[in-house]
Image 1 (cartoon, rainbow, N blue to C red):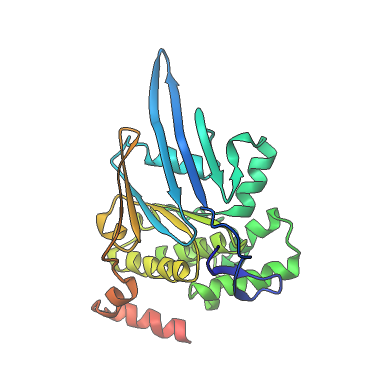
Image 2: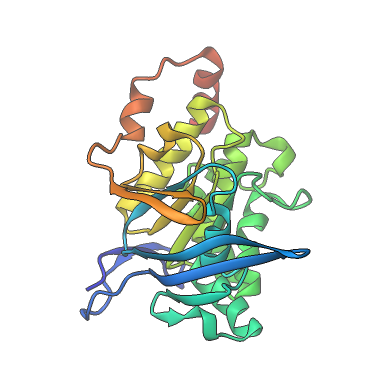
Length: 278
């Protein structure tokens, strides 16, 4: 049975809907996943028979040193690359059998992406950037704006809907990117180093948003190099040399909201809060 999931309905409202009762199926099921790359006469074994399952509603941190295979794994589960062999099921759809056009459609419908570099279009304002995935999904224009406003409100950026990226701080740009990842109510949110370009406090603010989304039912897989960021997740998977070195639940999940409540505020942050309230 699927738990309550965050959804944005066709009228633009955020809903908490129950899926039909059925056999509980994971959002991600990979079995014996292999990815090899040719480098001249050499073969690089980026992933070596990886098997992993992510249940609906989990918040998973993926860690590992450079060259461990974590980025390759994220590219595969993000449908940005194909495995050399093995099976990958996304929300009960066998991805490895899909044609390129089917893969693109699945990616737009079931996946939301958050990147380290934000990847916002500079000539578009916040609400236009958030609406972009819905343009590709064929959502009617009037519904696009309603959903985009709901998503921006959900990340605390409603008042800045018409600001362009160069008028926003790094943390605000990442909030726009999170809103953009939400608007099509994806089955899975993939966050690739979402705090990598942010200062410590802003990083915790972003993690507080992701924790709220996860509490509302979102399934999130997050890549990070920072052990403290992983403590905000419910599970940590560590890669090394193309295999899963460890896979452990986090029994002491840190509350990002509680961390922020105890964080000393600067005058600049107080001013930002006043502007946001206005």
